[in-house]
Length: 483
Image 1 (tube, rainbow, N blue to C red):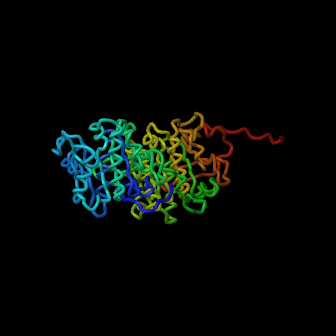
Image 2: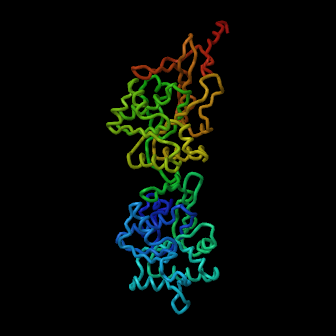
């Protein structure tokens, strides 16, 4: 994203100014295009209510002033001080006549410019919102007259220093004409179960490209900028971060490296989440903050389970060194989830993030490309010096082909820690090993892994066995002493 370009017009819509590189440029005109219910009017009302001096002008060609003020009140906006020219059907403003934006001597009918000048003899206010300008096309004899009159109004308002936001129904003939007349186009649309914003044009400035999720709620509109990881970077030291278990740190060559991605993979119940929280426990000892995003397990269960094995989750939560965020995946789009993570990193200073699990995150992504969104999120976190732990649950308990992740995202991992069940001496045991570590050497052995009331335990290397990764180990034949 480029740096903001000079003075900007503030817009009190969370996230929108980031997409617009700081806001609208003064003295320009911007089209907000979209279908019914996508949020066009909400955006315009929030734009008007953002005025620092409380002044602005609303010209309505669609909804009545009464309805617009009621709609603004429902989302907590005050239009006090905002002047309204109500030209909606049935408003009584000579609705049977032909509206015109031209001077009175150029056409008969209602002269909108004269009404503006009557309200503001010293010039219009700095903010003007026209909703919906596309309605005027139905009252014009042809497209030429429509474009001519719209151009005349915009030139008058912009020339007087006003910044104009106007709306149009997407796909209408008026919308096509209006796209050529403004300095910017903000397109709102539906994408199955979410709304999106896309900037198609923004003269005089850069902007955040692509589709950005937006949400309409009881406080109005909020925009969640699409995560572009290359635009975020922070200096950090790529040091080794131990987990506090001497044998495991020896196995992993000192720990996981700061600013890298680690996949902890294994079947259900093998101890993946507990191992991740062990790394976070050690981070708390260093005075660092960690965050777990749990898509499946609730806080109460996770807290109780960890504290029975010596990981003091309650104490960590109380001190602020740990946050556990229960995420309902079907409620959030990938952009909204990325925004939650960014808030923790950029405002709360989180240094370690764990997604528990990738299967739950897949539900949040839904039909989108999980590889693309996981790549963007992990790349962003790595650039910011945050250590990432991805919990991946394998469907098979034992015996099948080894697949550290189910979504072909192994390439993202700098380190892969594998946990497996194995049947040994008539009992069910667990094994742990390191499959990969880009940032340094590691021990190429498997060790027994135990979860006890005194904490996690890692045993000596399991020599003399084969087939551990398949879960059915057997003794290896001894070497012939004569060989």
